[in-house]
Image (cartoon, rainbow, N blue to C red; front, side, top):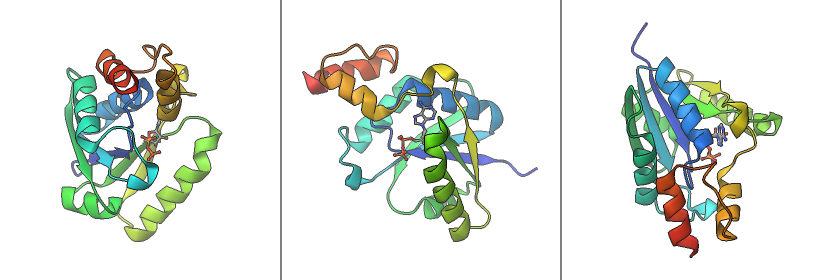
Length: 161
Ligand code: ADP
């Protein structure tokens, strides 16, 4: 089989332990994994692209395997072409993710037949975890240590202080 390069795209505002669980599982399966922060100003992210990239780098330090953290603007399929990647990695939590993820996967396939999307499910601890909930809790001075790594927790505290 040709070398499989996977891209895990997302907003990662900020990276959570759920995302990290998917990254960890992805690294076991794929030869190379690129975690790519999508520049999507429509989502009005709290953290800048460089901050999000840095938080992922810090949170994944020490994970075994070939991992790169990057960011991109524009269409995912174009980015995949540029990076010679053939697999999109996405996380599937509850059934509520399914419709959106299916639509994205089929749209990307329409744009480039050679790109396959593969879904991984995290540990059940993280099934209901989403970045927006983490931001919400942190903004009300709640404890988010079970949901994010200490470096991300610190950034959230500094941001909402
Ligand atoms: P997007 O804005 O593209 O949905 P996110 O950063 O929210 O970006 O999520 C990126 C990917 O990670 C998506 O496939 C999403 O379903 C998945 N994901 C988010 N949170 C979790 C989690 N707790 N467990 C597993 N996958 C997750």
